[in-house]
Length: 458
Ligand code: BES
Ligand code: MN
Ligand code: MN
Image (cartoon, rainbow, N blue to C red; front, side):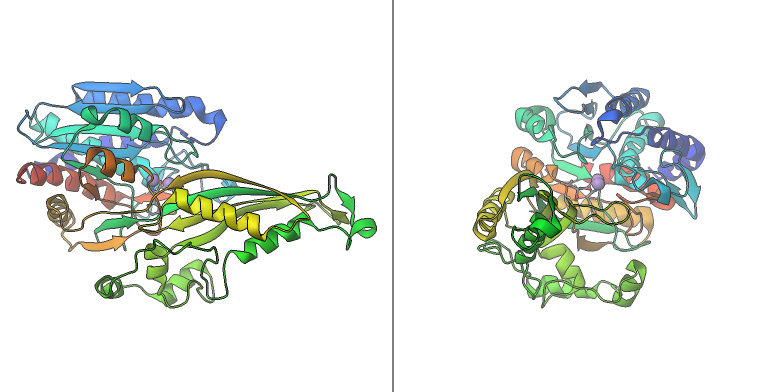
């Protein structure tokens, strides 16, 4: 079994070359121009599974981007079944001018593979394919039955995987779902994530007069939609950093003292955090630490705002329209549908009669907590510790992985968030990267996990 280290050493160049080929495909799911590239990435994975020699490898078309399904069932009926989820789509690259080199021309710098999608999620996902390859090429078999379901719409606003899972519970039936799409607390500190926030995403358009007006002739007499929009946005949070929407906190699961203590034990350095971000002070909900705010408290953020004149020089205009995109991160046990209703009601209530408003609910995902004490997690701890030679820490994340809730609900299998990213990987930002150590260590950890989990009692 410790052949995995040998295998990695022998195949070091091949493994990196393959990952680089995968990273070269600009599979940006939210940009229409890249539709074919997204499909090429799906087909690239299919070919990779065929080389590894999986029993069944399928491209599954959806109304959006395709899913990839693969399975190897040679361990037999009595063996455990592991399902791996990941996503092969990536975020857009803008602002492109801040990249040190082309986002789809991977290279290694300071021990990190730099490319869009390297950490989120192609590099992390790929570790599981390569762990399977190690077993099949060097031992001819895997210790468990292994299935993969890989999507190309995680970063897009519409996704079809949930529907597919709901319609195919038998196909996806498994004893555990393994996902590597989260981060460690720190470099050299292997971490297991047991909580993700949810999200509720909106677009609000405010329309005032039926056309742009001269601000001299009309200013002071007609409401300005940009200012109304800004005013509405300001009503959403109070001066204590709490969201002011009635009923918003109704279902929030409060942190236990025990959990707060555990957060506190993590080596979080606020001074370093501020310096890294270039901010003088942090700010958030009163009464909570920074980690608590990110991991266990809901928030409201405006993601973009549009309206009026921002060209060269000046234009004395009172614009007809303004719009904003904004979102709430949710925590257990909030439900995105319930939040959407409360937000709509609140905006109807506070919007002045001088404007028309149009609120679009764009997407939602519920928050999740996974059981940090189950047998699957035990196997995960052991494998990470063996692979990286360091003690595992438990953490939560502020980000969201929408499909996790669906896996839990439909498959009734525990989900293990065995992330391999690092906090400075710049996911969704310029110069995204993935640690070379975590790539190879991740392959090891995945291989150990399959072995460890195969020995668990059913
Ligand atoms: N891998 C991330 C989720 C994540 C973010 C994990 C940060 C750990 C730290 C995932 O690909 C992602 O970006 N999710 C989106 C989902 C949203 C578009 C519904 C997110 O969290 O914004
Ligand atoms: Mn991701
Ligand atoms: Mn992402």
